[in-house]
Length: 382
Image (cartoon, rainbow, N blue to C red; front, top):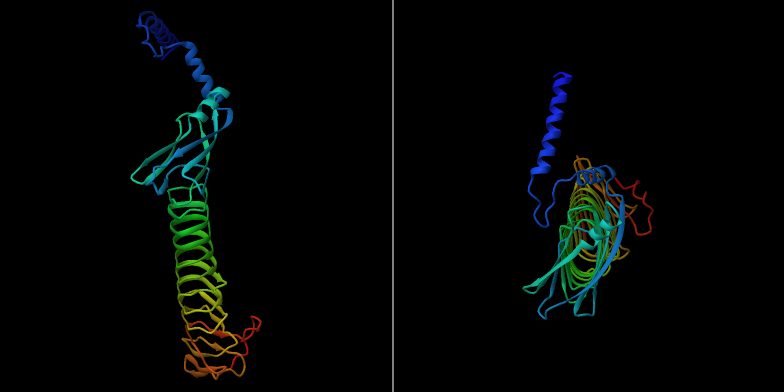
């Protein structure tokens, strides 16, 4: 196309635009008509962007029906804090950051971000509405009756819950802290850190999560994969199923129920054991320090060792290491018998008592005295 033809095309476009402006019907009430100023304003917005920002804090109180005993929260927020109190309603604080084209628009968008409570069938559901324009970040604080059960679904910000009756986490992620719960804490969590303290009981499934658990007054059941699990002061039965997780439990002297751990890969460390314990592991290093004599059974498959420190009181040992594994005992405890690719040792120590049963396939079995340094056992009887 030559210059002459290009000029003709541009001329036709200009003439067409002028004819449209002269002949187009007037815009309806509330509608917008075409104008050059509006086009320029849109261009300025596209080039300049949303440079203005503001923060707005709104507070509201929501009364609850007499039969409402559950709070369900499904929202997207930077942080969510729920505190149980001696009260009959829900007090909410919503702190919103928003940007906008100018200060007025940023303020308008921040105020348009609101909580959406819906109550019915014994439950209060709490969501949040964001306007389409601009970008907003919200921080939500709720003060609720401590009698409520709390359910959090698909949440990924910072989460803090204290003082409720029961808590359920459904597919949460990120950073979470739950403490001071009189009943059960349950649910699923992934990719982050979870701290749970001072709760009635616990049932938790995690993936890629660092879990910290303390002061569980009842039963604790934990399934975990690809993370770290640290716990202390578990008073009730403990059941752990782990994969590729480093596990450490301490202060187990008050545990009243049996402790069961099944683990693949990772490591298992338990200190203060004073109740019935069974550990089934594969390719995981196991170390147990006992506070009192109690039945202990460890079955380990792989090259990693089993290390046990029994109490100073009496107990029975029943040890078997196969496929090249070795048994290492303090001098003068028991005789280790060898037969081809396996070693055995069995008998009473300090007058006998509960049985400590250790089985290792390929890995070593190391038994220490309570006051022994970690290297003791290298000179085991053969």
